[in-house]
Amino acid sequence: MEAEPTTHALLAIFREEVGSDRIGPDDDFYAVGGDSLTAVRVVARATAQGMPLRLIDLLMNPSVHELVEHLRSAGGGDPEEADGSRARPGGSLVDPADRAAMPARVLDALPASALQTGLIFQCEMAEDPGLYHDLIGLRVTAPYDENLFRSALHELMDRHPALRSSFDLGGYAESMQLFWGDVVEPLETERVGTVAEADAAVTAWRDKQLSTALDWEHAPLFRCHVAAGPGDTFRLTVAIHHAIMDGWSFATVLVDLLTLYDALLTGTGHRQPEPPAAAAAEFVRLERAAVDSPEAAEFWLALCDVPPLLDRERYSRPADASGRRAAVLPHSLFEELRARAAEARVPLKSLLLAVHCWALGRIAGRTTDVVTGVVVNGRPEIPDADHVVGLFLNTVPLRLPSTSGTWAGQARTLWKAEVAATPHRRHPLALIEENLGRHAFDVAFNFTDFHVYRQLGALTALSVDGWWDQDKASHPMSCDFTLDYPGFGSGLLISFDPDLVSEKQVDAYVSLTVGGLHAAARGVHSAETEASNG
Image (cartoon, rainbow, N blue to C red):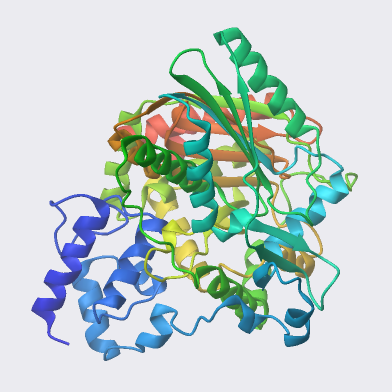
């Protein structure tokens, strides 16, 4: 493989996907703004252009020059292995007898993933209709035409099979996700005359959804509500269960729906790429390979077999994370942190994770072996996989051996741990905990740059504001670091179970984390310096 054309091609892909013409061949992809979803697109595009890569290749060789050298030494690799072309329609993963027994209206089916079945099981155990029942609401400034909006919703459901799916957990040889044809759009419309009436309609509908358990066996597993008025405005609320999609997918659904409606209002076509049909089946295949991997089981056991942060033995139920804290932080702080991360040649996520683990250690009174759950992306490395709607996440334990040292050093330690974990990232959390014999972690960490929402700024017939959201996970404490989240901005969102994590602990964590972020952004040398100042 010739180095110069490959360098130019990879450099063009890096620049286009990250959105910067200033990236050079020696720049670290993750340090200049690349993230897990962008990495999937880079790998897929490179493979499609005859440069077969895997996600682990980009993690281990994050600059263009390093990738070119890797491709040269690998001799071109195996394109079929890299691009996921072995994926087949969902039927190839379904037992023929099960397939024959399915109703005629079922267009396709897949074995439910371990995370899907685990989420449903937790919801049944908790008997809490609000658990993993996610809602997002917003105000749309545009005329509301119910027929056009219903047409946009119909096209949305046609584009994304997950929106036409249900689950059957006992009628076949294994638990199944069934994808149906011609599912009626789940749209409720109310006409209102004042802002107060719109607020009341939204609140009543939200409360009804959160108090009503979903019927897993009947599609669809999402709902839409519109309070139309006053004037050329309407309030849109969408409720979706986490078992059918992750947070990025939820954002994609909202952007697609509003884009489709905008196109119908203007009488123009939309340019949304068609999601690859094989992505969901490929994810199930990859997860099954991870389930069958003894190496993965051994890797996770060695990583998280340390004393837990919390005593949860007396609690048999899933956590009731009804407590909330939020810290809005200036976007400029994250830009400064990104610059410090680039100097350390790590992603911004790793620096945030270092501060998070240090703060956890402080509130737990621990300076060694701090384990936290980290949400990881398991989307298949195929073209346009980021446009697919589904549940492609896993939450895995990562350990910081010591909270002492420099921020950069801790971030590099955690980055190396995440790179080492990448080949095993799809090994289901339920199996990790089964092997460990207890919960693998008590606090979960997530970092998301919701750049997909920026597409809404290009719409011409409508505009949006007034965002709000509501969700509930089953971890004792979840810490979500976010960039450009509508209605919130950039900062830290925390949910917690007050029976497992005290408000005093949560407030201390927020104070420590915010202080640590500012210290890391200023280039303060070490976590100990910040601790002594605190």
